[in-house]
Image (cartoon, rainbow, N blue to C red):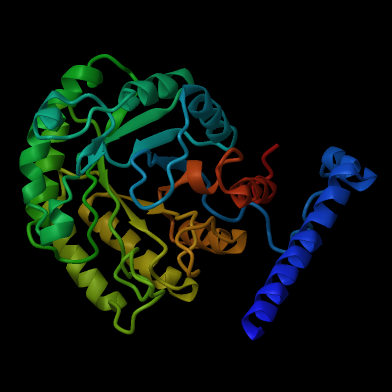
Length: 367
């Protein structure tokens, strides 16, 4: 008897709950308020009342293209969506697009004869060709990101990537570099933070081969600073207790820059692994080192937020603003971002990315 009563109660509670959910939904479907809400739009004459100086940061003039998307959701765009995104990029002054990697483990961006023989999957579209055509259409420079086999992430040894990219670099230059004027340079895609086994030799060898095969086109790297927010993306942590000091960072990167000079033309440190009150100290050292060893000093202004437990969402505008202002104070040469299409584009899967785009335009007074 008691069991039957409990069952009756649960049934009634379920029906009541369903009714409570259904009634507002039905009312919303048939009510006038819903019809009005469909037609409401923002008033284009209204702008945010900024209480900070406008256009006081370094403009973002380059972006990575993360089509492999191994740790952020894939947006499944076709060429028409990519074409629109290039137009959005162009609208805010982006003149450089960088394919972050031509492949990661078995997923690749173009039909590479070498990588297909190694067991990689056949892509449905030749993304390298598409990006080069779009870059040419919108008068941008395209940087080709080298292949990442994943072996470095498994072993901590970057030297294993040299062998794969020996073939990829030659193959890509013959297939695309001699065909497209928009092929503007190379991105050596291995990411490190400090002295890593084989890093100097790997960066120098791959950078030199890229430059030799392409008659000196520029190369760059985008390492990360081993700050307190330098935790693995798969980790539930947001920070760690031990982090590199400015002095250690200067010493270690001085040795790396000395070893790669002549083969690497620019370094774009990722800016999201240190706190906002540490930006000036690290940025000043980065610029000093780049000048000393003859490299251009770029910043990789991350447009995703590392301070939230959900990985990864578009960044709060003020955080991006502070990073770009610090880069300008340090006299950096260029700002690129990871990454426009997911975290800043008006057509991103994230609604807040389009709002970041609008706030950026207001701040830099872009119409």
